Image (cartoon, rainbow, N blue to C red; front, side):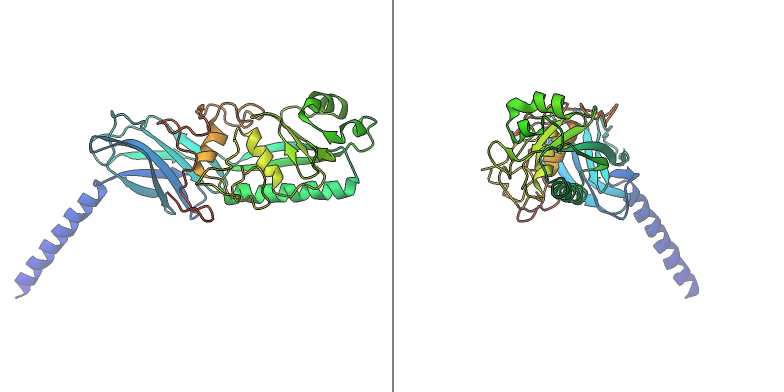
Length: 320
């Protein structure tokens, strides 16, 4: 009887060993480094499965390694991984070597959070009131960036009192034809976005203007809601308005007329970081050596995920 029990135990151990061996080689994986675990991270994976191109497959995890199925290379898709997590910038790993072994590992090493300086010029007073308003915008923008995995923070939010400048009154009612003048007359800090707090922008005290996509410039009205600055920075980062698109609403940061802006899709984050016209790549040079793309607003290609790509839900819109 004892001999039979020992035989059963040996067979069980052998089966366990076989099972463990099969688990180690049954699927490809993505492994992250420098992520703030156990915070959740997510990836968009491109490759080929079963001979068919697979673009923008989504996965999330809180562990270091996530299985993603069996990918191969050589099809109509790119072979790459785009990763997102808290307090780290988007990371794109190109030319992943997906093989037929079903045990490939795509390693993703996140870069440190990007730190950007900003200069804020209070052109129209009262200075104390407008300084406090600017600080509110700073706090709200920082919070949205952190919550939405932007991977960007302010290293400096310098507030300058320009209310006594003799040219200040010239720019009280601002429009974009005045951009060069306000920069020359009021001041401009190099290698950063400059924000000018005036009275009205395009005729409204609650409006703002970046004056161009990818610019290093923002003008803000004197009563702007505290989530408007993150919207204007979106334009600096080469993002467009999403008004009227069925898979967006007023809670997205790029709605043109909202007081409830809070969300950024992963499709938008992809453009904000990778578009070569984004201020992250031009004004700040914050991604040296990293890949760039030219993704149009509504592009849906191998290189460019659709704008409404969501690894995580955004309010009423689920992950997709």
